Image 1 (cartoon, rainbow, N blue to C red):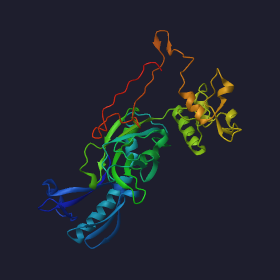
Image 2: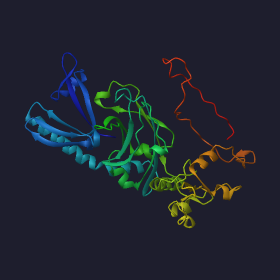
Image 3: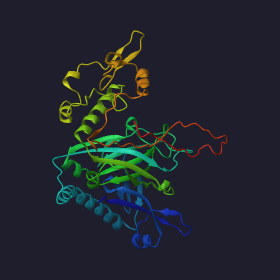
Length: 388
């Protein structure tokens, strides 16, 4: 389980927070005289200074770091607090092996490596952090190490992330390292600010065991909101996670390589590297997503008019190989909108051999068809055709 340090503020007779004195918290907290001001993972709490009955704490990490003076009733209470915090830190350091042993005791076959595919899907009903909206992005930490960061989505309280905006990432490490790096993944939702410090809105924690047992289905987690946003209701972060397949590993390597080279094309929406579909996944994985015959192929070339053409991937249209081998970005986009040809029925006898899953997660740029400004946002519905 995730161990938290809770900082409580005392309420005065009018119900407003007044001090950080922690004397007699247990009973008074139960009586409603205290409110939770901050909540932090134990490993993100550090004693900076101890002077008499005051302890200076560093709380959080990154842009969400806070420094607070905690005042105790006397010096002895302050010393006890620091000793307990130190003891908990030592105990927590030994949790890693126990967590791993506990997971293996359930008969789980973990192996020597952990390879997980994780997707930051969307958030809903985020609190307003700017004047009227929020520019949200998500950072992901495993222990004290940041393992991923999405792009920010401007001016929306219901952001959606895609492959282009950093929704996908992979964890690839030894099982000992995975269980030894804190208490699973911490997803922190921030509001981007171009002029000042980014504001931390809230966090979600997912344990190692939950990550390993993920099936890839979307799960919505309630955000643990920061103090200044506690009044917001229904704030959730949607995630997907599951063990990575060999094809996932190949795709993620291809995705990373394509982003570095800024390649444009037609493989999975954008062509990142020339993966041939008929090659077994283990062959592709061994080649790092690139087959030997493709290593020296150019991805782009200049046209006579000074423009640029891109190699179509994974391969040209077999019925028009020369015409579709090299195309401009505009030609690729036009080609994608043309009717599909050469359909193959995906079934063997009377039984289907596969199933296609798709999900409509958002729609941008819809026109305002209402005459009244008051009803600028109206209900829309979507239709789809069963033949693709």
